[in-house]
Length: 372
Image (cartoon, rainbow, N blue to C red; front, side, top):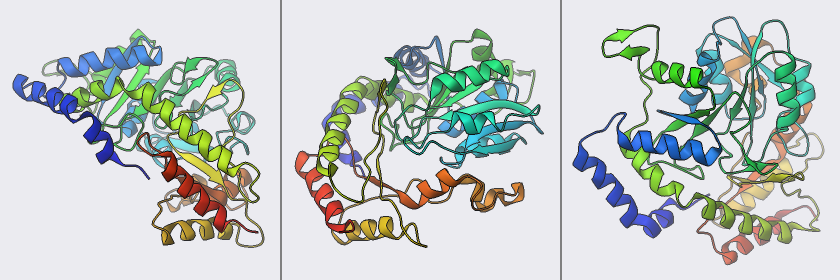
């Protein structure tokens, strides 16, 4: 799905120099590299502050806690996303409430969110899926109407825009993942929260460090969730290349789009007006038919495997049907758009170092396997 070795080969001297600088300093936790990266990433996102944490999941967890989510609360999340979005809610003892998605973008439906707001709702999480903006404006209006924080789960869409503004700059705060496969990936787990709120910034810096306000003085329960200096140093180097990498992804996505134009049985990603996709994933839909809605999609995936081409399904089971959340009573048919998407989506290889010839080869193999 991607070639991290090729990326490293292109920037190895920069990366090694950055790591060597940390080793020479012998400062490994909450040092100058983290402070600098927090400033740089916040500026990139159009935010006032960044708070580096240990992972994207922790960014969600601490962000929710800083916004006041506690045991017994409800938090509305999309059903079609990675389990970490809901898992962060569950880890606080709160209840994830699953909303359906839009059929064109596969992002959370504002109408479905609105129908699920209750007096127990404490926050709304908007996931920007695959590199594409959710319908942020109606979600902001809903959050304001009900006096709720809107948290952007921007784990997959760093660098994408809506209305000329970077995603992550709209909500109360934004949670970002630097998992190695991301467009801006660390060499291990890493994450960050970005926000404009001085109050939340101060609170989050306490929460990530055992609730401490001074050495040996803790005022509340917290976590050990600190971004490592080495990871920050690596990410600072990579950040300088991020926009160029995203532009290359867009070029490759346009080639895929052209190759699939007019093909029967495949739907390329839909990008609404005003949005710029960052193409963390290039995800098509293979519309199903009959009793086994996933069979056509699975046949294409098998065909690619036979030709030595990777593909992946993100995500095969919506969250409301995951065994983890069986106790919440979700049933097939509850969220039909998310359930259908889970049977039809297929993500194809895309990364900046891909060649046009590689994209052509993948596209040709996909078209070969489509229903005639």
